[in-house]
Length: 113
Length: 110
Image (cartoon, rainbow over all chains, first blue to last red):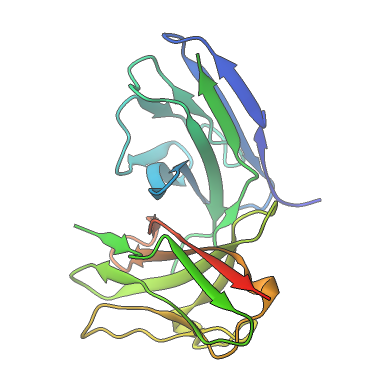
């Protein structure tokens, strides 16, 4: 079954702890994205990667880090430096080039207590 | 700055009424523009893209470069159209970047 998988669906962490969200795709897409979704603010781009071993900051990268060691995987670490980490996180992938469709995961809801 | 603005958080219409979801963008070059939709309990998915000039599920969207707008329209709304709609922009200068608006919830009442 092809697609993009995020895990876990729900994640609880204590304040001050780093936490890593998983995103895996088997669509053979070069590009991958991480978005944060907050009520009334839509999807805000955290990081994106167009190729293995390369990634760029999005609009709200502070307090987050990513890696792209494999084409299939693009994990997101929410660090203790992120001031307001409780949110819904969406991962997506797409072919690179013009006019391509992005495919989304089901999302991970992170709650920091 | 590259930005997508959807001014309405919620749009509520009756079944059979026309629908227009507004999208304005800020980008100095020629962008690629998309509409994505998220139905209840489903993943966010592509609805249509401006380059294709297609009609999907009765929805159309026209790029107006003068007004920097890409409004989504449907002449007769159906209850199954109720969903969250996002307008998105990909700069031609950086096709790896994909920027979304705040989203508009469309509620179609019977």
